[in-house]
Image 1 (cartoon, rainbow over the protein chains, first blue to last red):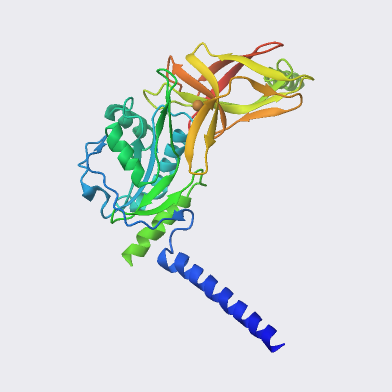
Image 2: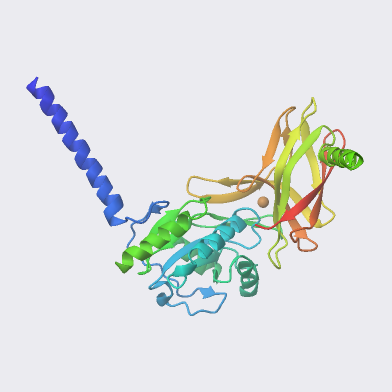
Length: 203
Length: 142
Ligand SMILES: [Cu+2]
């Protein structure tokens, strides 16, 4: 009888400690990321060698002191990418009060067709602040690898499409990967998370 | 007054019937407006087969675009997105297919002119048997 009680208490103890640990891991370490999957990576995201459609200088200061939401795509993608860019537009509008502390980035996986001029027209249609990045296919492939994703051409003559990752990646103000979001997300979820991480860092 | 109501009623019946050809019912069709310089877009909606036999889409085209294909967007467990052409889409009797973002879609390629909200895109669908379907799909902003 005593042994049984002891086992129950031990079980309770393990359960409570495990859930406390889990709670602390999720709520103290990253109290703010609620709608995405937290990523712990010490890899610094290196943007050198890429180019922006607005000709911003892309040294590693590009990701500093800001929270960046980044995704991959191509402008002639009719289904997934416009949905993603409409989401970027909506979240950017919701984040207008914090606009100097966030940036939204679209990285083309189709540099062959997506010139800087095309990125400007395409992204501008959604929101003037979305930043388009491009580069050589090799540089872009190496960049994608930092996020654990890749892309490839699906040959269909001149109207080929690109297979690519649909994830949204959150990069912290030190240029490190912080979280990953899987669309489609209800409107406002990203803005809520980003507002919280911004507030937390200010504290 | 009564006369006007009758006319309105008659008009309502007419418009409702226009989405109902060849034993097919179409609902909620729209095509996405195109950002500047972009010649590719996608159309969505629901197609219900009300006839007693299966319908197989054998051809799909538009006088406003070079190519129209039925595509299926697939996302794998790693989040990789791929679009594949669906060459013969079959709709069993009494069943419907839904074209929706992130899934089955009517892919429009090589648009001759950009599509702006308020305009329409004509899409002609030929089935392996029965009457062809002409859809006038309204263009919508994202
Ligand atoms: Cu497609």
